[in-house]
Image 1: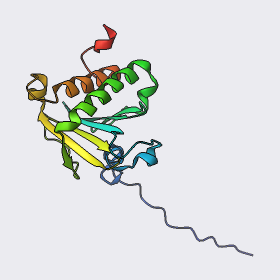
Image 2 (image 1 turned 90 degrees about the horizontal axis):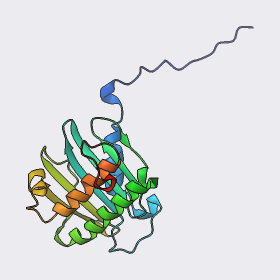
Image 3 (image 1 turned 60 degrees about the vertical axis):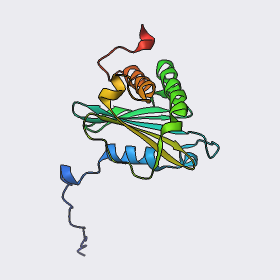
Length: 174
């Protein structure tokens, strides 16, 4: 007795261009998921996540800090750090960023779109359960302390430094 097996034709591997873009997937999740979807319970007007898009020589670094201290950094060129909020130095820097973000919320503008910033610009997204606000500024204005979000920028840079992905030493290590 002869047994015939029907096999599905072998599918070719997807090309590099067809693979899902993990950076964009993670960034989009941070910018769109509800607090309950990430295990956070907050009042409607309270901040639950801060997302910062920072220019890098090879693209964009997206820093994500949640109210519970969870902190990650996604690099558009590939790589990053996920779940670094368990490290005390990262958590401390992230808490300072969160505190600055609460203050900065007063001059942020409501938004429903989340484009990547052009080179040389920084975008801060401040999310509450009832909506997202954004602050956009040139990195030069922020570095020169001529923009109201300069303190927020400095705190974001401190978190990145604590993650070990910045050239400058973190202030907390001095």
